Length: 340
Image (cartoon, rainbow, N blue to C red):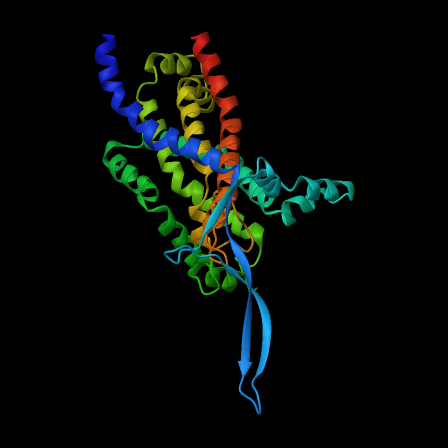
């Protein structure tokens, strides 16, 4: 392909990436070093109460926002360097907890580390489950008869079609106090069950939902890959007496390895930004994620202000976390490609 033709096809994508990804990213990075706050002034307010022979007056000082000519609150932006990141990471409090032998309290008392712990656990635990469940479904469908293959594929894809928030709400409604499955479990065990009273049970439900929701995506990818497995190699393995497990391990899995890397990359990038589950399960009191923490900073506080700077810093740290997770997978992929 000629260079001119190549750039003609690629240019629109590059422009879109520059406008909608690169420029906002640079803007967020810059905003993380600045803090914008409202300007306030202290005014003296005199309050008089009618009395005889003269009114009784009291003077009180009150802090009020400074307004401009259009009655809009005046704000000022100041460069604070890494102070926002320090406020988010709280290194002094971390050092104090470690020196007191309370290392694990870091993940309970500081919001960022609390969100980081859940985000990492959620990402790393669901990754092998999604790949494993997706591969098992693909292998099962691949060996099914043609008559039932179509309906099985349709049913298997249903969880992936459902909107994430709706799917999370469906799982929540099944396990809340008056939920169908909660009632069934209580009748079987004879004990009162409250799945949303502890953080660990909520996390388990979230992981179950994520695997149930994303495994169909892995299944579709693996099923397409299975159609290109070398049948001659499989037949040779059968003649040599290889069991089904050995054929999968030494023939099928190596053939699907590039697809496994691809699914791992997509899953790491998507799951590290877990957000829908937090909203769907209403788990903010027990479990939060880095993405939800950024969202919370953007919510107006009691005074109507938003922590734009902290939200920007949280976003940048989330992006750094995704890059760190992707580096091993990308380096392994590049190494395998070089081996060819």
